[in-house]
Length: 66
Image (cartoon, rainbow, N blue to C red; front, side, top):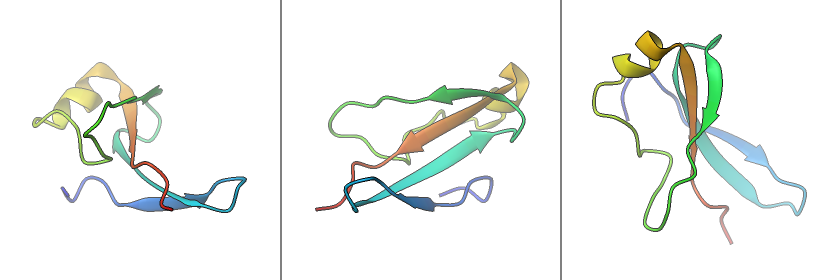
């Protein structure tokens, strides 16, 4: 993973853990990446600067464990 994003986790209501990452500026317009299978939080544009230039904060995720 690039140094511009760090893996984060959240516990969802059913108790499972969801891992996600954010790309772009923290104040950017939030955009959720709804990937297909296969896919994960690591799916992003290879030029991460595109998110900053577009003024977005891309949120990517992994499917919950379990």
